[in-house]
Image (cartoon, rainbow, N blue to C red; front, side, top):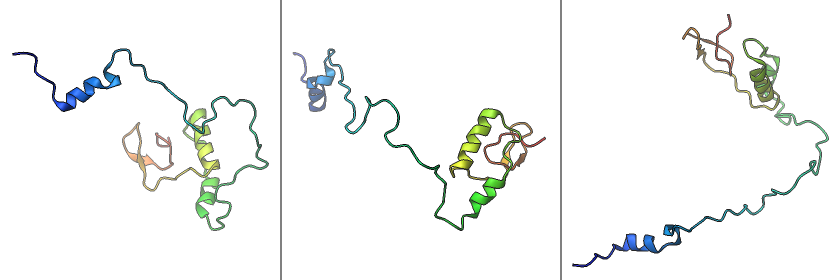
Length: 117
């Protein structure tokens, strides 16, 4: 009895170039990407973007703009929350969240982890 032939599925895998030990994949850059470009932007924005500027009935942006978001967060977290508020990504909580300190549902502001003291 000699060596048994490989099944078709394994025979095709053994013949593929991926099975050879010298195979090294070639990483090409995606078409349309501009990896070599450097320097300032081609066009500078003339005014800051305003979220929902066309929606005149957006009351959520008005409510979020009036919130005091400074209490109970560090400076870095405050910057993140302020960015979300400025660019229309801030989503207020619909239900109280659980506090990590006392395990009570007492956190009423979004992106906060501790209830107010």
